[in-house]
Image 1 (cartoon, helix red, strand yellow):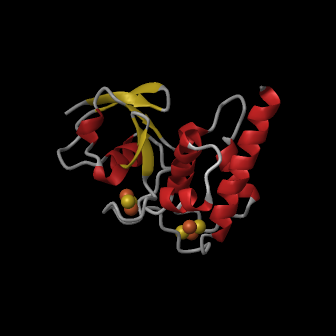
Image 2: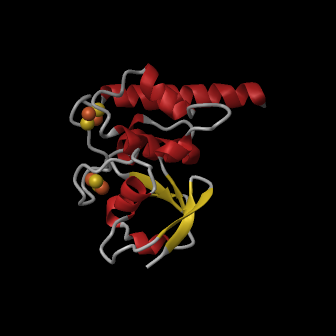
Image 3: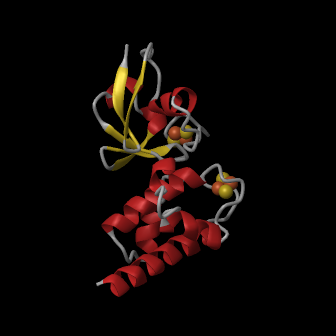
Length: 162
Ligand code: FES
Ligand code: FES
């Protein structure tokens, strides 16, 4: 089947999509968007998280055919061509929250979603929002630091611009 959808703001299409093909496979192997990572392919680790119509989903659990006519935003789509990295992406770098980086794309999308809903999350809010994202390297403290940093920067920027 042919699947046509919006990926990071542009219309894309893929031919000969097979029945069991996942959105993750489609993004990585056909559309040249390898940012989302395949770590478990079972919905357990969160490394493949992308936005689907504005809500975070595990792209390994979404059938490619389900995204027909819908909007997908991947970790690549968080950055802006003019302004550069999203504040969440920059905060992860600055806080040292990226080691092997395999979990990072999913964490970035989940954090981006959390801060859009709750710009000043408590530590419990952060833990709850990221509870589906596994990291084997950092021990999570650097990730907590990164989310706090992104929150602080985002809030101070919006205070200045008000
Ligand atoms: S690869 Fe999708 S949840 Fe692990
Ligand atoms: S940085 Fe390696 S799994 Fe998280």
